[in-house]
Image (cartoon, rainbow, N blue to C red; front, side):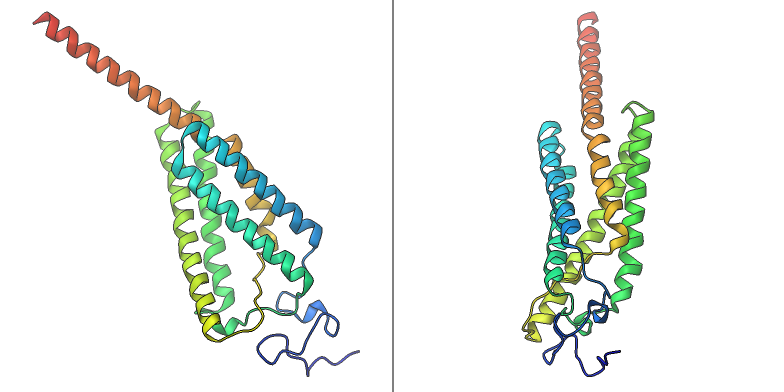
Length: 227
């Protein structure tokens, strides 16, 4: 059995390469698959294009803004996993993070699950009410808003991490891969939001408001004529 105790897997003094060390010595203890990550990158790219087209169709600007950047974020993550397929040993040192790496999982994964649950509940309420439930819209917007908020916090921490890494003058840029357990869940949620797109709901609400406004104007005109 080989002794790898003398090898350093990250940092400026790293001496561990894929030719010398197995992927089990990396912080993730595995080598990301190339084909699977390319497939997910393409699927999120397709989803991004479809959501853009649906957003233009229904003019749901805030929703398409969230979905666009969410898909872009996923594509960047899978691009990083493809980079790690070439060399899973080297990675950015966890000492540059403000918090312990596991804390990011404990905070942001439950937040993501909660936002997906809210969006799913909103979509279910919208389907059962044939798009006429304001509560369904409010729940969906709450889920999306919470997801955008947590994403912004995560991006801010990631940018701070990159800045701290840059100050440390690291030589080899790498990207931290995404958690494998949530790859399929996030992809399914993105495609489900194509089926349960809020555009028709908002369109029905706009039509209802326009109809109510027309009725109010008609009643006012009748009262004026009767006076």
